[in-house]
Amino acid sequence: MDFFSDSELLDLLRSLTNVTNHGQLSWHRAGKYEFEATVGENHFYLASRDNDGYEPYILIISQNGDEVERVTQEELGDNSSQQLSELYSTAKRKTLGIDRVVKNILDSLKQLEEEPPF
Image (cartoon, rainbow, N blue to C red; front, side):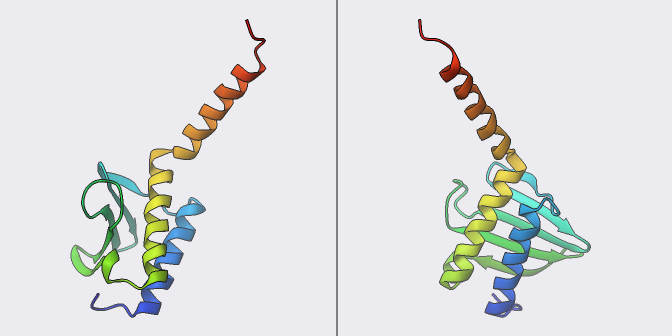
């Protein structure tokens, strides 16, 4: 971490998570365990460092094609590390439509429960 202070990075991660949760920021799949989003001139790349979908995660921030910051979960304090994990999970849920998938599964199960047994 070179340019952001710990508190600035934590604020950024919280803000990214918040706007993602509220549907104001759309992430796109960049690979199996990689997601990207753009806000103005700023580009965010979020990935599972080991390409397995699990921690540790990495966030790369670039502006106009130039990398500004590269953050890996191992170098973060507990709060920022937890927030990066939450951001990854939120971006994944929104991008893959996991909330919709869960709702469909639960609706299907509810229908089965309401059917009379044999």
